[in-house]
Image (tube, rainbow, N blue to C red; front, side, top):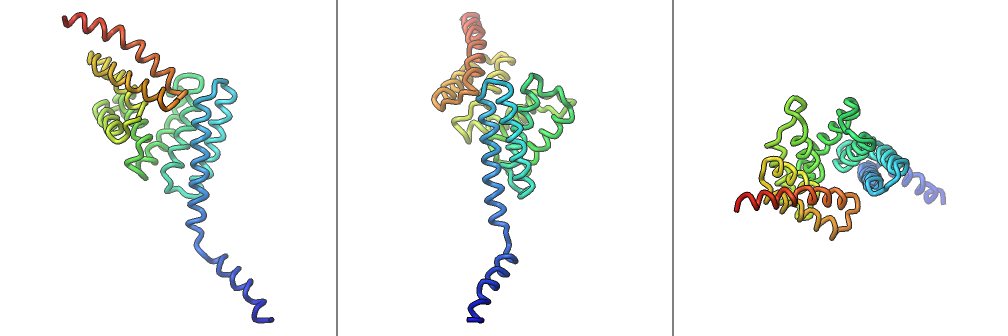
Length: 218
């Protein structure tokens, strides 16, 4: 009986000294999934207070995931998502330089850990196109990133919309309207409520210009 009483104690000692990497990794993964879900829910919500609450919860969950596993790319992207949405909830994403830099660090960290993270590539490509050169912008590199995203993810909406606006600004209205129309169709088919209004607006802006351009070429 005495020998059997030692069994629980031995098991406890083994378990307490065992590596917890797998368990911690699973916990970090679950937290990062929840963090991204909060960001997505915030994007779909209409009321500012509800949107902000989702983004703040997303930030907390992402930070907890990173504390458990700093090597988890999805956790850093979830942090980027929540930080970015908090900044632009009232408008301009460039209005807070410190918050903007923290957001971009989270995005760059995501790509450092996973260079093929398609959502991060799409976001980075968009920023490279929109940012001035003095702030790190590089339109050519940004376009390459977005085309790469579209090749790898046929259902990408954001990448198509950004490229559509870029091509339209260059006068390439035919390709711009094709990209924007496809983006709208995908957003509707996938029921992406947060992206449908933007896609509709861009298509609405581009169609008259495209029609005028086509008439001028006749």
